[in-house]
Length: 455
Image: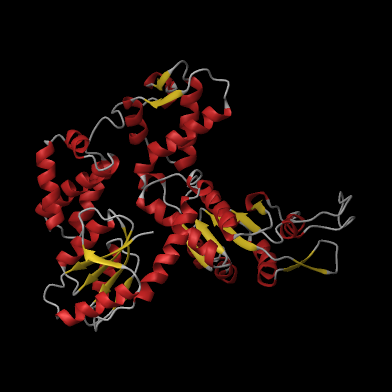
């Protein structure tokens, strides 16, 4: 675990104030140094003030390392300026107006972050919740944090096929629950049998009840109860559910005695429950009971950089399931990768998985999967997806920058800087390979990197 403290804009600060910061961090055995070009590990940035230059530096540092906090050695800034710091990808913001920072504040944040990093880097998480996009990594980390450090009920919302059930399973694994992961699909509950499914029943409680049976509440004792698609519950069933969730007590159908069950509640829905509450279709008291903590899964169109890693993951799963295959599949050829990147996925990750499965079953022989493996019904008509660039995602990014009032020179500069940062990350910081992919000389890229590091 490494921590670097970077200085920015402190050249004019009184030397004794900087000395106090140095002594504070030296006492905690934390290194204090000037910002390197490509920092590794965790970092803290010391700022004198929030200005355009400071925000640009924070964005650059956050693209290469985890910036745990920004410490301000100035009077309290305006709220808008403080939000701008967090928008740069920084995890927290501390106010040290007298210049004497608390290293213990930093150490506590480092320890929490390191614990979470170990959780999300574990194979049981990394190999299931696949994705490297910033939005997906932030979501997985946030869910792991609430699972590990709280026992709150969690409401997961998002479109169909975005991995809500996988996040629910993550909560079960990370929370340390000893009991089972119990799933109840609320779309299958009928008013007649809902009581039995939720709370169980006694023998003879109704026609066909030949033996006593446990419901979901009993089965989840000591573990996690996952109510999938809770937004589909009719109002009458919502009322039944509310009391049991509040008191963790229930009666079996046909019984007069109360039963107790201690579980963690996780719910998921593709509906906007706040809108449902406003429309009178979902009980407000139940909503606030199940939504002690909320998260939303991003659709696949908002995390396009995860398409190819997910496709490769599904391909590896299929290959593992059918070990009788003589030759391993060597991924997808370039044309097929372009197709996968340019295709629309209304069903999100679930649809991508089904697309990869169809390709897998049509492919034969050694070598990568090619365009010929596409079923006729999947083949595009007219313009070929992935063949043209700039595409709609690029257009959307430029539109967003223009809406924020960013000028052409700044857009051009940031696009070039982002391309350099991304290709260096993909090529393991190899300058020669990165230059080749960017279509520039090795020397030109070196000069550009030095210029970025000095700003």
